[in-house]
Length: 406
Image (tube, rainbow, N blue to C red):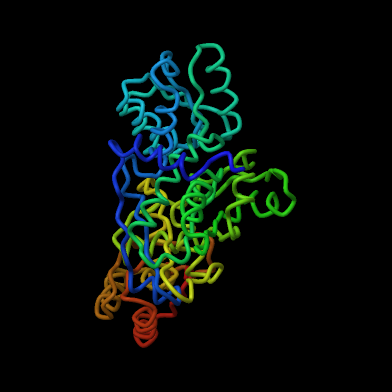
């Protein structure tokens, strides 16, 4: 008998409905074409607090009741759970403390503080933070709210699955990010309890993916690394409850690489105008790389579980994509070290229609004539074909230019 049932999820829905948003299911023709079949996106990145986590947090507070929350609540989190619990506690008038790893997302920490939570920053991993939260709960009489390994949390996350059943009439396959497993198991219970024919497939970042081995062995097998841009699902060890539920309800778990996660984040931003964090983009990454195929009949839905990403990371991902697609090139060439030489080079670039982002003189570390200087240019182009045209124009102008970053 499952420790979390459809009835639990339906009851949780009544507790979370007042605060949560019913997030939209949107389509994308470009992503569907790239994935090779109809693809819909459950935009949970537009949820209050920017992720699905508030569903579980509200359900847990409701289960604790006024007496259970009398001294406040405490949690450990990489960021999204902290932010969600802070918002849920704020909505319910409950004191909240959260323990977050020192490398946690700045945006998520500031959001948690904005909801009135006391944020304790420190520790190198979620495991260390969880131990600190457990000590605080014992010493202060606070209620510990686990980020995933709790039946009330799982039931709250499962409310997302109920929305999918109502909003996607021909639902055939659900692709869901997996960290601790609370969202994936909750969604699977909700969906498959009512529609056993629907497949639910989990996706983890390959850099931190304990579930494939753990499911195969039937016991929790931790991993060493948790360094991934999908920090929201960087959980090194499955929980006892969630491993049991995943074993019973999930149809499979796939993994995706870092570069593919970054590419999915960029495409979601450029083509769909959706800001999605790495953890929320792994499902789309799996579909775009063929790790998961769209259903042959009916609709496939990728859950975009969160959108809390630092602006600096988004900028780095955008620059990387521009470089890989040929929209940004870095080239090195030589000019005479005399007045007017640089101006002539830049005029050639301008005539070729490229935008100059940066210009640097390089006089050290190269075998240059005493009357020469090297010039490094960062250029924006319209794509790989235009970049080739720029290089051809420079060669025609007598410049021996080499692309040093592609």
